[in-house]
Image (cartoon, rainbow over all chains, first blue to last red; front, top):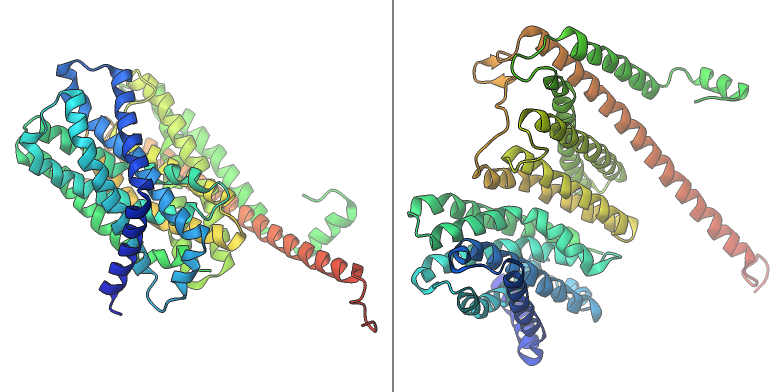
Length: 225
Length: 256
């Protein structure tokens, strides 16, 4: 089987499981909405504040929601010794990382598609006008979150404190994604010129490239036994 | 430290312990450094005596970064060769790095209170150092909860590499905010040490040397302790196994 076919099979396995149970997506979406609501309780933003607070709310919500899906994704692999079985196949373990990365990314993007309109309504901020640029920044940021998140999820499920370790590992390492994501989103929503947003976007691209490659190469050491 | 006569004799027979020499040399240099920092170096014109914390702050930060560089190199070495000694080196260096980074952050906060009027600001250098501190504290957590010895060593090595590669990105992303941190005065484009009066530079260099020496001493001691811990654990395992074998009926020689 070619590498691409392997990744496709791995992705299909996760998608099929999710389509049949809809556990992760439901939990992530409901949790994301709840976090967004809690933010509104906490700040009760006036319409003028909403624009300034929305990017932070959006990215913190996504970061929290992503840890939910990420930790679940390797719990499933571990519970039935699925990961051991996958490791027996004669292909590069980096491909397992690629497959998991894609399924985690799809889950996060699905949550974003459901969350964005809800946030726009709750916070009363019209997002539709900037949807193209916003989608690009969200996609880049999600790839970054999931790239390090998938690696750390595989690590944390094998530790004594399990899923508890994931957010602690993820948040300091994903700080560049959160900072650049929030600042870029802020710039886009405020209608700043593209040149103001570009440094953040460039950082997101650099982060994505570096950690997808590093994750692919180093994953082998995380799952070996 | 030898206490009984026999211990002292056997220690004398073994010759000088170079770790002990390092510790004493580092301490002596540190005392000289503190003398120079407090009495020899001139008073700074605008910051007055508060500036003298710089002779502790800069060496601490330097040792912190040095230690994390060593963690990165040792982590790569460990994943490459799987030699336990690389893992022990990474572990020892992580611990010392966290201590000195904590010292750098704390001394910086004290100075900031005097110079900026606030303990903390979200200046890029402060933020990066803080995130750095988090990464290596989490790395110690991974070692504590990471499961069996080999696995937690692998996980910590992965984090040692990924975390180190992340530092430039963290820094670039926080540089997006305006910088408040004093500009570098020691290594600048006008040449080494040009931003400082010579007395200040000498005092700083002596302190940097003292802190570096202490790092090397602490590192080798901690590293040796961990090696000893390993040896004891292995010995204990051995003992337990043989006791277990002896205690089982039916496995004794001659029976069965």
